[in-house]
Image (tube, rainbow, N blue to C red; front, side):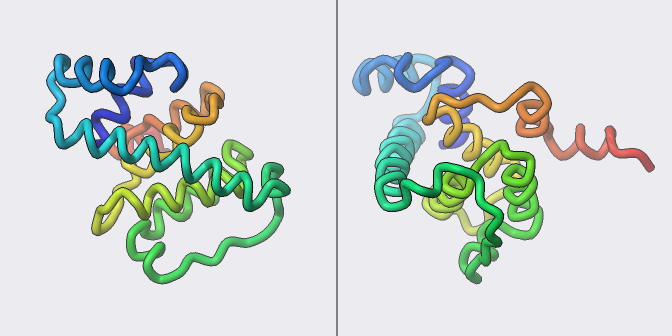
Length: 158
């Protein structure tokens, strides 16, 4: 599923640039993605749109940044882990995402049906949430979102 999401992000500048569902499925199949992965990814994206609409309607005042503190329940903590939660807090403090987007990221991470979500997969989720809203992180944040663990270790001073 995550490979399909990355492909969509890299191929289509905005979600509205994607062809209709039927044509998109054909294109993704032609590129070599399995039907099950395509179905999961497109279902996940549909649910992302519904979640975004639902959260926006329920919490219209949350579109700006807040200084509140988010407490993670055990299930969220177990799925995300310390590194991912720290990364989410970093993105929020750097004003890459706001409180509403944070909640959408967490909800979509929980919906990914993984036992424990890797930091790389969380980064894909963040990118897809921003992409679905027509927002793009600045260059430095984009590099941070696509930096893998090996590259991160080599750039850290010792």
